[in-house]
Image 1 (tube, rainbow, N blue to C red):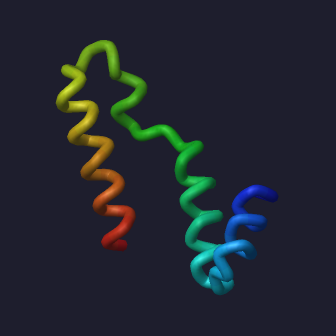
Image 2: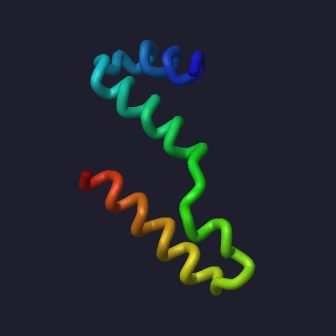
Image 3: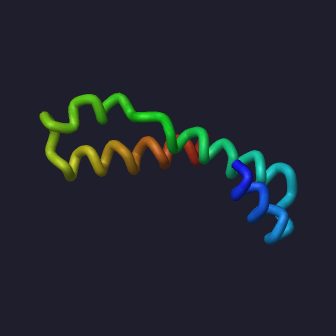
Length: 60
């Protein structure tokens, strides 16, 4: 997280934006339910599910 905090300071981001970026960092480490079945699903469907999950996260 040191790099994110350093960049936030460089770009003079407020605490709320820094919290959002740290949240994204933590979310990036989590796998989606569909990733366990990647071998059984078409790549296009996996991409669609990933994009949809990100859209839902940003709307929420």
